[in-house]
Amino acid sequence: MFHRLIPAAIGLCVVAGPAAAQPRCLDYHALLADAAARYGEQPVSLALSARGHAVVTLANPRSGTWTLLVRRADGCTRAVDHGEAWTAIDPPDRNPPNLDPSQSGEPS
Image 1 (cartoon, rainbow, N blue to C red):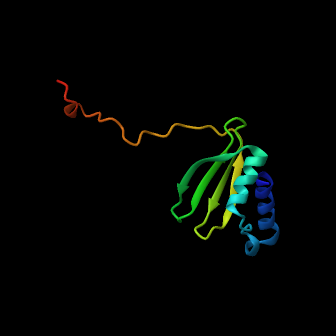
Image 2: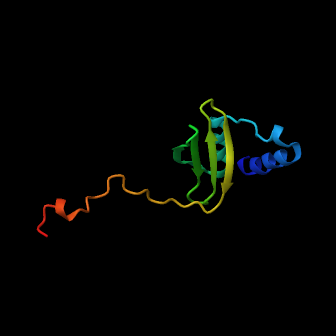
Image 3: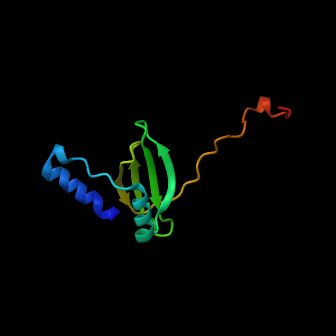
């Protein structure tokens, strides 16, 4: 469903013009269930956009497929992109070690 939704939505934008440029809103929980059933994708990251939208990445670490969802505050959810070759990257340390030698307590 996800991987067919994007091309269909783009096609509607081209054929119907700006008035129909927005794809319809989908149910967030139904999208999660469908992604899990069809592609084995699960949420792997969550971010908050500058516009206040939740940006959710679904991925399957074994197959490498991924889907990017955007969920607005009103609950409207859209699949905005999808692809292959997803790879997990360790996040940077939120509390990096103090690298200032003057604070290490060791003689310089």
